[in-house]
Every structure is written in structure tokens, then in C-alpha cells.
Amino acid sequence: MNDGPSKPAMREALVAAAFELFLERGFEQTTVDDIVSLAGVGRRSFFRYFPAKEDVVFPDHERSLAEMTEFLDSGTGEEDPVKHACDAARLVLRMYAEQPAFSVQRYRLTRKVPGLRAYELSVVWRYEHTLAAYLRGRFAARPEGPLRADVIAAAVVAAHNHALRTWLRSGGESDWVAEVDAAMAFVTDTWSDRPADRGAARPGEEPEDEVVVLVASRKAPLWRMVQGIESALGGN
Amino acid sequence: MNDGPSKPAMREALVAAAFELFLERGFEQTTVDDIVSLAGVGRRSFFRYFPAKEDVVFPDHERSLAEMTEFLDSGTGEEDPVKHACDAARLVLRMYAEQPAFSVQRYRLTRKVPGLRAYELSVVWRYEHTLAAYLRGRFAARPEGPLRADVIAAAVVAAHNHALRTWLRSGGESDWVAEVDAAMAFVTDTWSDRPADRGAARPGEEPEDEVVVLVASRKAPLWRMVQGIESALGGN
Image 1 (spheres, rainbow over the protein chains, first blue to last red):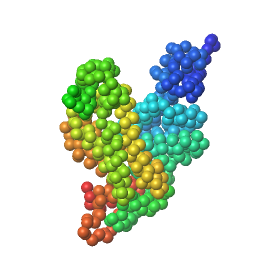
Image 2 (cartoon, rainbow over the protein chains, first blue to last red):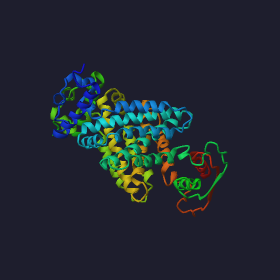
Image 3 (tube, one colour):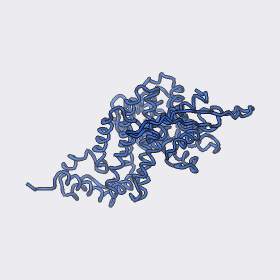
Image 4 (cartoon, rainbow over the protein chains, first blue to last red):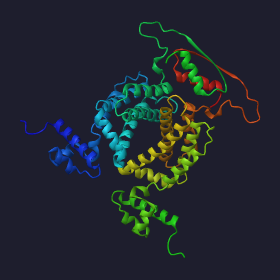
């Protein structure tokens, strides 16, 4: 029984054919018929994998969203929620980084085609919504929990997108792990209850009950005081 | 010379007719021909005001975006950038609040029609992009300035949308000024160099050089220390 490409191979062949045509003649000028004809499969096969032409451009987001949801749900309720949300966002960047050439090609295409840009925004919105739902659960008992959850979810997504864009603009050449580390550190330093677990006792150590003393002018901006605390805590 | 509705009246008549039909028979089932026929104007008049059917649903965003840009540009470079960005976002919420019935109706429609939801996301993205561009300019000399700008712009937009949604879900009944104040305070308290100008000398007063002393366990979460500082500063 080997009368055609296997299912994953057919899906990949459709994606490859679609991109070849999108780049050659443009997204709007390419029809689903053109794609299936180049891929050598039937029209119905296309719609088995992709609800519409836009979906072939982002073939991995459904899987990635499911992976993010599963990861978020895997929390025990004891984990730092901001750090957990940041780790969930890292999964998405890893998905892009696994296929650098494809990701860079798609980035160039998406910037040129308004319809794809709109589609991408709707995908980004779903990631943000998923993160916000998790954070709302974790912040349920906190004052202004839903507001805090929505703002932090947006910040995580913006930091992720900043790292992703930086990496894409380098043509996939820059160190994506360093980009995402810097971006997520900015978010956790702002909001995490345990930024980089500074000052936390290591397993097997007696917790040190040291004290931090900060003396600052009442007129100093809050961020400078926070910087003061952070440097007193000695992390970096 | 009074041979037809004036220009703003014609635009308003088109918006009113479009909404009547969208709510009655659905967005997808309504054509531009249906709208112009109910409004009693020619087809070309429609396209003079609106590039596409989607645009009639959000007739004020172009004006609002222009207003936001103008407001951001009006900064002297001395203003607190985070507070200025928050004030720019308030302008958008005010635009919604000026027409409560229309805004609530549109909210219900937008939630039902995926095409409108996508359109709305693209509008939100333009606001975010405008805020980020302003903040990037202001943070140019700061470490990680572009990252900071992108994250804060997203946070401002998320806080704005949180306040807007809360107000829309109340059917336009809740106090939108209180909603937006709370949302923006969350953002400025997180990042502003001068949160609510606490402790700043009032004009004509000698600046007080008071000092804040915070003593905290090294293991305390950073947010708790920040809360400690805030309560020492005595604002609320």
C-alpha cells in the first residue's frame, strides 16, 4: 500500500507548493487550484488539512496553541504564574526557531500581504487569550486580578514578539535563546514574585533570613527604588 | 442649494442604515447595495466614505488614530512617557464613551462576526504600533529601550481594552472614567517614573527631601517590597 504521499508528507507538500507559488506570483494571485496542481494532489486533500488558503501559511499554530494550553495546565498551582506564562511563550518561539528558513520566508510574505497580517493578528490574539485565561485563574484572589492578568498576558506576548521579530530580521541568524531570555527577563523582573529566584534558598540549604534595607529619597522614581532593591538582592 | 443630505449627515445615514441591516439580517448577509438603498444614497457615495463594508462598522478610528498621533506628538519631551501614552489611550476610550448605544451595539456585533473581529484586531494593532513608536523615541537612550517600549505599549493597550470591555459589558452603564483610571493607574504604578506624582513638590512649595526606608526579608517577593514602598509613600 504505497499509492501516494503519506499524510504528513502530503501536508508538507501542500505547504511547500503554496509557498513556492506565493513567493513567485503573490498570495492573492495564487489559487487553491494552483497549489494542489503543483503539489500533485486533489483539491479535497487541501481542505482536509487547511480550512482556507490563509491556514497553509501558518500550518503549525493549532498544534502550538494546543501545546501551550497543555503546558499551562501542567502547572501545580505552586509555580510562579508570570514565569510559567513566559515559559509557555518560549514554546512558541521554539516552534519558529525549529524551521528558520520557513519562518523567515513567511515573515517576509506576511509583511507584504494585508490578509495574512490580519490572520497573524488573530493567531497572536488567541495566544494572548490563552495566557490571560491561565493568569486570571492564578490571580483570582488578588486585587485587580483580571486587569493584572490581561496586562501581563499582553506584556508576555509583546516581549515574545519583540524577540521573534529581532530574530526574524536577522534572517534567523541571531541567537534566539538569548533574545527570548532577555525579553522574558524584562517581564519577570517587572512582575514575577520570584524574579530569577533571587535570594531563594537552594535545596538542602537553610533559608537565610537576611534583610534588605533600602533608603531612598521620597522623590526618587519607583523604578529607581526597585532597581535599588534588585541590586541589593545581588542578582543579575 | 439643498438637494440632499449634507456630507456628515450622509455619512451618519450610511452608518445608521448599515447597523440596522447588520443587526436585522447579519453582517455577511448585508450587501453595500442593501445599505445604500436603505440610506437613500448612491453606491458611489458609500465608497467615498468607506473603503469597504467593514469600515462602516468602525467609522471613527481613522480620526481617533490621527488624534492620538497628534496628542503624542504634542509632548515636549519632558513629560513622563508612560503617563503620556496612557493619556493618549484615554482619548480612544472617550471616543467610545461619547456614543454609548452605538459602541455597545457594535461590541455585540463584533463578537458575532469573525471578519469584524479580525478587522478590530488590525485597528488595535495600529494603536499599539503608534504608542510603541512614541515610546521607542522616548526610551531611545535607555537600556533595552525598544523592548521596554513594545512591552509598555502592549500593556497600555491591554489595560485600555480591559477598561473598555468592562464598560461595554455593563451595557455602557458603568463609570468609564473610573474604569480607565484604575486600568491606567495599574500601568503607571508599574512603570511610570513619577507614579501619580506622589511626593512631588507642588508648585510654590519647597521640595521636601524626605527619605523612604524599607526593611524587608530578602525572601520577600519583589512586588511585596514595591507595595511596601508604595504604602510608605502614602499614595493610594
